[in-house]
Length: 190
Image (cartoon, rainbow, N blue to C red; front, side):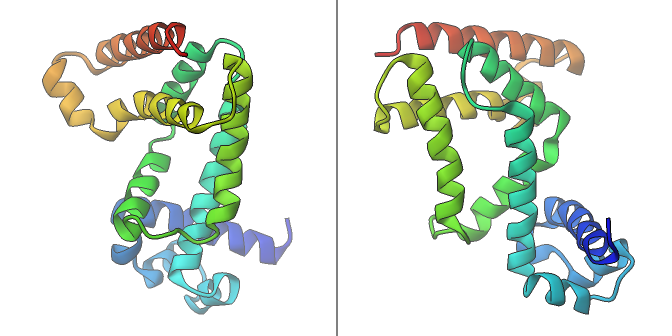
């Protein structure tokens, strides 16, 4: 890895932690630069702005997620289980997506078309696995499956209130329930 790509990657790594902890508005460029061991002007040289750096962080995190999970195919309920496991092992992605949601609300995110293409591939794969058309119903099904897997990690305190006790036992029970719930729902999918 050359010096430029090494510096860029250090900035992305430092920014991921800072953005996950504080969001776009609360993240500090000088803190990111200090964590990366560079002058903060490097952020603007590589990315142009704090928002563009955030977009690069999201893009990288989403690419890692896609590579780690793959497309919805085969046993779709187990796909939901893999999503559940991924979010448990990589909690920063959900934090970043929640901060993005708070920052942009319903306004378009940077490079929205590119991001949408990634989801179009997932919708097409899900439609193929279900033997249905690529349509709004399939898109809504994907959204629901993603939500099932992410929700326990998005609101861990609520999971603890509803299912007090050992965290590991709770996760095992929630994962099993989420997969079984998805399986039952997919059996009745039109």
